[in-house]
Length: 317
Image 1 (tube, one colour):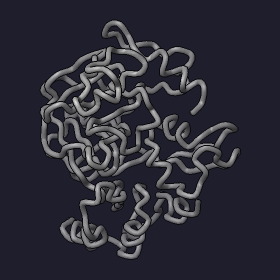
Image 2: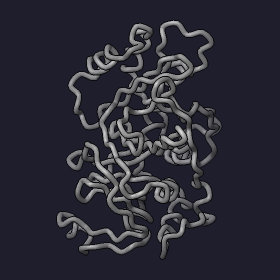
Image 3: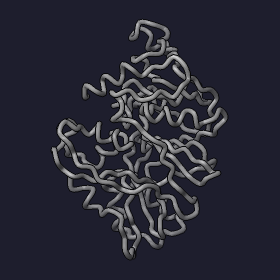
Image 4: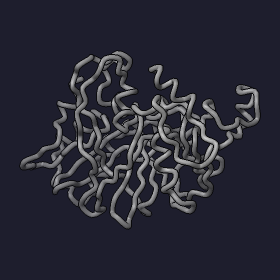
């Protein structure tokens, strides 16, 4: 990891709930609120793909974070690219667009299978989205419908008994080594929470003991917007089908927790229940299932003026 990123970790704690201004060490990884319009009926693909030219000393982790993505999102798209020394000067497509996950409450939704959080605002029909880190195998993030029960800035980490010997303490005060980062939002599933992290490279990975980890710059934005009582849906959906401009898209992710015995059959069954299933090109659909690259793919049978990136553009590297 770059020296400037390591320096970031030394300045992450604050002494009171004030949204901290980025230090010079973290300017590269600042973030602003991005709200995408949506309509559950016919506009469920948000954002648009972008381009990025790889610079000297870039890593895929840096590129992901700089573009508001988790590491998994660039790794799935460029599985053969060297994560630590990607080709300097190469222009790559960045998948900064997503099919919305299904939601009942249109408030907070976490799709564990894609390692991403969505924050809906029904009043303005807009949605924000951020990448996350999730529970490792054996410590899977819980699924279900919950609510935000508590919010704490500069949280103390009360270490689980099973880990106290490892850390040599029962609790860890706020600071650069605290894995909760600057803010935590607890939800009604026991000891779990949505929080920042002292290890940003864990976003887009299975790294936690079940909690949801956000980049420091994203939790700073999300925390003040989410009131206690907000509904939280945590789902597991590796196959999402959406619409935009009359076109049908499918976004397929790997079955990270190995919950689905046959992903192709699962996806086909899911499509059969979609009201626009008869408009889908099944060759494109099955190709998206095979790639599992997490990119929204236009699978409309007849698409005039289709501007969506072609599958080959996302699979050649």
